[in-house]
Image 1 (tube, rainbow, N blue to C red):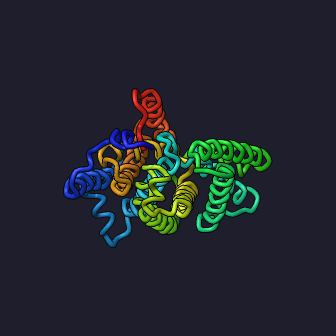
Image 2: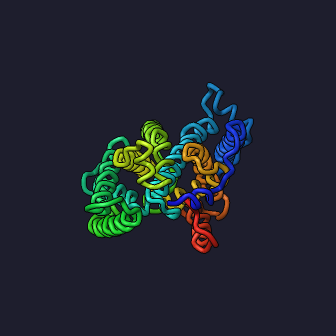
Image 3: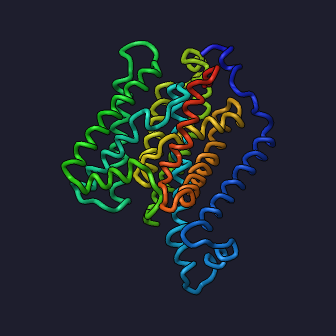
Length: 344
């Protein structure tokens, strides 16, 4: 990437104070959407009723509804949204492809296939158990993509990684479908995870997802400066003392951990890892660190909004993954038909 491409990036970085003010706005928006998620459903609730349900020591229908269903669902949307958004940002930064997301690297397909095997053939039903299978499937896929896409000599070509990811994703998706035909119960699980949904998830999922998301984001944050240097080109990054191989390994580990945790919790929700980083770049400018902070707030906001819209658009509830796809597909077309590609 040359200097002119760097200057083509959005230059809205501004001061740290301006960033903090914008981040506070997006945080307030996220909280507002979370409250809306608690209030809207088959049984409408006011903010006052929600507060009473959270703090009232007496058992009630409202208290059970909030604590056992809607609050875990909102927390899952926030954690999984942040995980998928950051994973998408890392995928785009590492491959220098504005249309990249965990799905295009095959990570989601690998995690989904591992879940089908765990549920359909090993009889594993608990999230705390099959998350390890999801992580192993995602890690195996990421390793294969990296090994296949790695050139024998010379610099890493990001397009090779993308092509390798698409190929591995297609292979693992086909294997998952084949296995689902052998075991119908595996097909039911595959269908649920392929669509991506927040409904009916166990509250026990929240803590493991929180741990994985926090670890993944910390790894991603530690690589932000290195990714900024890589955006200048590999030669420039080496001149700045960046260990390129270590950076790529750390980024792949972060993508794998974040995508595996989110996929095993809520399913392979597409387009979210594509939408949120692009929206964040419009506000954050060129710094990966600031883009990451905005993405961590914008992505869960989009997923919460999709989940709320899925409850009210039709008499029967639409999965959040379907609504995200309906929002993300037009965005993908707009990006593809843009006059100028997005510089990364």
